[in-house]
Length: 95
Image (cartoon, rainbow, N blue to C red; front, side, top):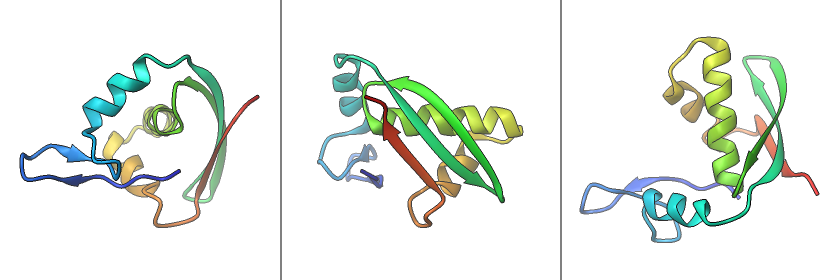
């Protein structure tokens, strides 16, 4: 599930569920972490990575952060590159 953020009238980021990012992350902290596998195509290079997270969104955040560190760019670059407007990544839950 890909989500998009937007600002509400209080200046907080909202996710399409109507909850703020902080509320969703707080809820995710109570869930057990499971393994997620992600395949990301960044500038023609395919990266296969794993992470443990409570939700697919949290896994996406973790994997974007890892890619940003690996390529020496700011995290916002990865968030924008993998914002769901292109078919350049896939995340699945390991059973």
